[in-house]
Image (tube, rainbow, N blue to C red):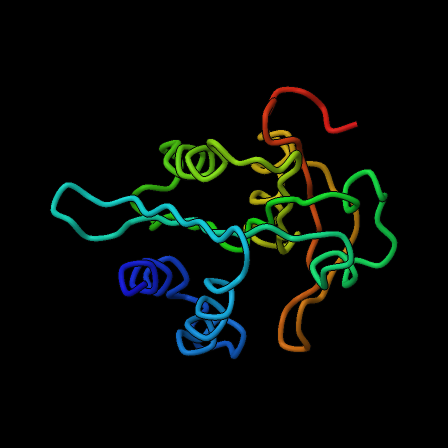
Length: 168
């Protein structure tokens, strides 16, 4: 997990002073998430071998806190196993190159779940990050605040198998 933590630290460098983004806090979350069912991760490396991007997630079932923290969610989304995309990030020189989408798609490849869900700070990048996810086929289905230290997040979802198809 060390390369994933190194990639995280570089991607989130401007935010590491905030409690929710501190490397030890992330490492604890990653350790917990890594033990959860259906865990998968993808790392991207620069030609010289340093990690420059990552994504990871795991399977969440109906009733999982992933869903319950959102409030009322359509059972069509939360009623069967889904992939919770817990983290995705790319270092500055690789942003805007399509690398994040390739990492995302590799993480989804071969998954058995019908849907993938993620949470994003709607204010990140003045809304640009959420708009990127919308361009990938995600739609907002609710709001969530996973911890007291975290910002309010938009909960988003899309089908895994057909990214061009609308969720509903």
